[in-house]
Image (cartoon, rainbow, N blue to C red; front, side, top):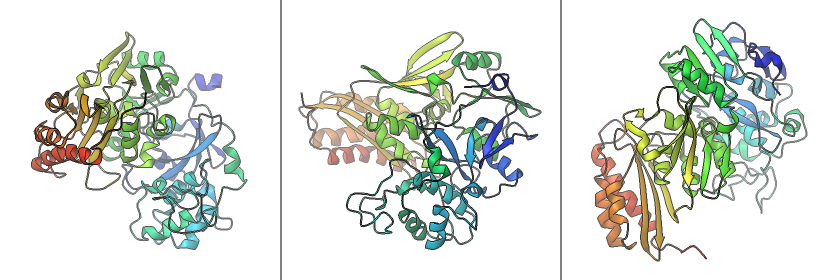
Amino acid sequence: MNTPEAAAGAEPRFTINGVQRDFGPQPSHTTALDWLRTNRLTGAKEGCAEGECGACAILLAQTDRNGGTHWTAVNSCLVPMATLDGQELVTSEGLGTPEKMHPVQAAMAQAGGSQCGFCTPGFVCSMASEFYRKDRAPLPGAVSEAAAVEPSHRECGANGFDLHALSGNLCRCTGYRPIRDAAYSLGPALEEDLARRRNYPAPDYRQTRLTRSDGQFVRATTIEQACALLAETPAAVIVAGSTDWGVDVNLRARRAPLVLAIDRIPELDAIELRADEVDIGAAVPLSEIEKMLDGTVPLLAQLIPQFASRLIRNRATLGGNLGTGSPIGDSAPALLALGANIVLVSTGGERVLPLADYFTGYRKTLKEPGELIKSVRIPLPLSNLSAFHKIAKRRFDDISSVAIAFSLQIDTQLITRARIGLGGVAATPLRAHATEKFLTGKPWTQDTVTRAAALLGAEGTPMSDHRASSHYRSMMLSNSLLKLYTEHATIKEASA
């Protein structure tokens, strides 16, 4: 429960490596990384200042929605320190010492997983997060829990270690094989302090109000509080995961008179499965959406693993991704294909808009000053064929050149409904209306798809830039539909 002192807006304080620390005199925009390094916790490093390298990774205690805690790796370079008010953090220094190394640190040393050491603390924190995952267990048929063997499951070790837990961490000099070997050699988490800590809930987030000469940081704990503050200061910057705003703070020296954190408002941090729709709160981290839905919305299950890195997904939200209005945000094409609606809320109440109407121009939307995104609603039932194709220069952790999402209902090999969402081919995310209209009512055949692919290649107004040429983007649109048909030429009908 929040204490009276916290409700009154006491100075932020934290538990770091088991020790209580106060925020101190730093500016309100101070990131967790800068705060840690200023306070002599220098294990976390700044490599890129935009969440792409993982050198700054730390562990954050977060409630696992079953009453316990999971140790979550996050990019400290993007997180405002004030947003961690009342929370428990563990840095690489808190995991172990040279005299008594943590099992992850010992495994890295034994496997030769570190050379210059710059990235190592971040790798260790991300590896520790996966090490402490409660449902991590040896795969069936594994020779032993600690065997460093070729994975019996794609990109997963015999010990159950998911290698994608390290997808946001980069190493310039060691090479990834020794790091992988260290990860695959880890046994179960033994009964020690950080393992036992998982059995108890993480601390409540406090209602925070921090005022400094560079501006204010405020955490609202109710929608009413947030809307009232937005009504007073419509230019306030709204943050949940801060994976976008954190980049602006670091690389563009952006500041704001008011930064409003909405990450722990209950209505915004929940998912509801209803008979006719799935309602996803705007502040639910993508990693949590993936866990909680557990494949309920297959298109999102395809999208989320391709969205940036695990470190980013542990903080990033649908509300933040849509709130920027970016034409290359990965979530918009998928949500457009799902026919999603967006719920906006203000002091004047709620309004619901089709997401297809929400984007009005380059980084412009129908969201008015004083409004915030409350949730995204996906109507049910879902179509029986869906796919998300992301074309980028890197397989993971990259910005899309083109993103295409398909949601087709095919009954007895006849296309009865078609929705296609596109990103990266116009000033806004958009629906491929001409292609959708052509497909609807047509048989699901090679001839139909070939003709529709030509239409899809002409959708939008793709431009040429450093990621891809206009011609390439058009070709990828056409090819994506052909690829979809090749992979799903025969659609199995849903059983009655």
